[in-house]
Length: 120
Image: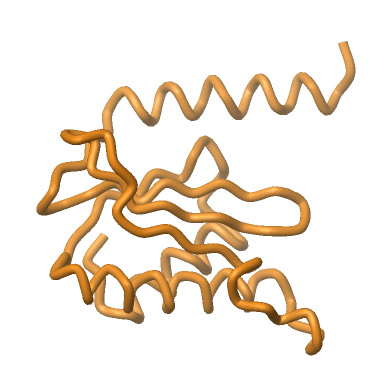
């Protein structure tokens, strides 16, 4: 078994463990995070209805012209997502890190959400 595949399997098992404890409602939805090597994606999900309320990513920010670090980009994604969430009238959310360690880009996105006014 390749090392990369084993790493992915471990992340998925961590994600299942985290998801067993988290649940998003209409008043406090779940913010689900996925990061690839190049990009970061976030969705705000109401698990009661099974619907995505808002989504955002660094692909949407169109920062190709300027050389922006991935961590700074994740912070911007968090801030813009927070603004979109506040427009929907939501002030608090549950943070689902998707089996990733809480550091680097994941932490930056969470900090951006907090900076934008969302209580995690």
